[in-house]
Length: 357
Image (cartoon, rainbow, N blue to C red; front, side, top):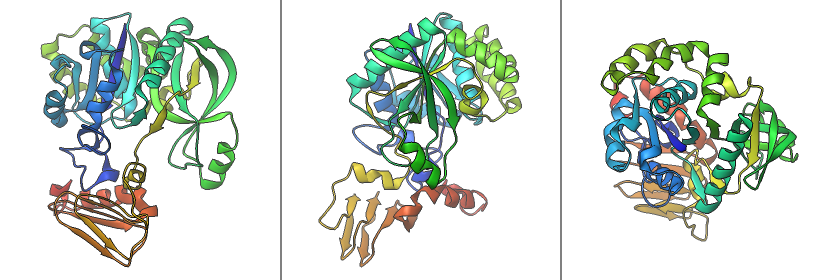
């Protein structure tokens, strides 16, 4: 049986000031209809219904997620006491699922991606599940690059491993961290490279074995969840989590594991990584300006305005991003939209501004 695990613990710092700790990116309607986590859960159906959907999130976000996803059992909303990156997050889900379905196949999905069309996504996910079951490998889904992105990791494919569910799968030759611009230009010219989507499929037995091999400390501390009663889970996690390392699944397992497979996505994918990414989803005027909410631009070019209340007015400026909420305003050049995270870090260091996070 396929289980869907939605990772929803992030804060979405690059979407400040709209994204806050209590209302992070995945709980907002950034693109499309409904919040991003609602879209992610809906995308899994009918392949995975609510009874086999799991969400790993921060404890203070759980009440909002419970309201947004009423079809997901309360026991499937797994609350992390503090963030420890994606490897502990996935381990938590794996051992919780093992308690209910030791023969499960797991699909791991970030909560804040835009994916279309749904039918192609489900087709790729089915193929990934077939490959995971038949090979026992860890499966990742690669995205065909469309430009030399420096904000994504890359995957180099090796020899063909087989064809499963109508899709070709290849052994992963290596994972590559976010490259500099020159290297990104070289990678995107080669058909061997794909972007790392952060979407994975594997059997429960394969991922728990990989955890024991590569991250034995994480496995040892979280494997008791397989036998633990639901009533004791929260207290157990409060005690266990501070002792876990903060490590990504890519660095902790995928880059080290012997049997990792990749297939090319049959769908369009966007991680909507910054405000500038909204260009794809908002209509432009004759000068390339885009807006959502109350936004007026005079004699400006290629500006983006997003308002949650006050009117944003721009005159004679170009290539700016301006975002306004009731208590904060962001202004930055379009090509610095990724650096909003640096501002959030500055605010976090100042007690005066922590209430804005």
